[in-house]
Amino acid sequence: MTATNNFASQNKLGEGGFGEVYMGELLTGQKIAIKRLSRNSRQGILEFKNELILISKLQHMNLVKLLGFCLYGEERMLIYEYMPNKSLDSFLFDANKSKLLDWQKRFGIIEGVAQGLLYLHKYSRLRVIHRDLKASNILLDENMNPKISDFGMARIFQQNELEANTKRVVGTYGYMSPEYAMEGVFSIKSDVYSFGVLMLEILSGRKNNSFFKTEHLFNLVGYAWELWNEGAAMDLMDPALDDSYMDQMLRCVHVGLLCVEDSAIDRPAMSGVLAMLTNDNLSLPSPKKPAFSLARQAIEAHISDKESECNSINWASISNMVPR
Image (cartoon, rainbow, N blue to C red; front, side, top):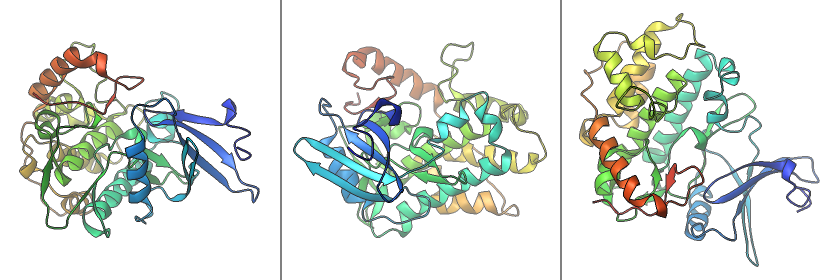
């Protein structure tokens, strides 16, 4: 309470389905971010415990660092290192701030997120599937280095466990892989799909659902696929970028399309993704058509049926969806 001036509104950094996030300053001068679980939230307790257990055991430069927590009366709080540049979406989808993200910064963010996911999937003591990877869950430090945050929806896998099935689908529309959104089946390849969507957003500066009310009948994934087939993939790029790094940009589009392929088995693992991104001499397979049309139509139909049950402020995240 002291650090945040009694959770003053001017210290509020943002909010989500979990609750609100505040900036605070300890008596030592260290700045912190406090994630405070809403007392009125119908979700959150399980997510709070899940995030606390998970992130306290994970250590990587591209994962946000947990400094402490609070369990006192009805209060549930997580205390994180403070990220002065907030989240990636606050830059990426802002017409003015996006100009600060030159190609080197964007590629650095792509590579850093890939490194963090590879650690979660392969090198951490716990094999973790994040399940809600998106631009708003990528925080940026003072040097614009990315850190994956929000592990409330994450799941721990056994090292020999390849996939799991759930009746409670959690995540964000547009970032969910087809097999997860429609069948509740998730694996490390579900995160790969989300990473592919995130990559395309970083390249284009557009949200995956930004075509919802346009003449296009599909999302950013479908638009990227259409441009790729027409040999016009550079048209996908954010106008704020110059074409000095055209070869690397096109390679990123190629890798992004490989990550969002319809079949999970066809998507590369994160180790392969990093290799393809950083080794220009590595030949890439041709991408196959992603299932953007079928997935979107089915999910939109489901939203129409279930939108009254959605708990998110902006209808972006879901916490209780039973696939048909």
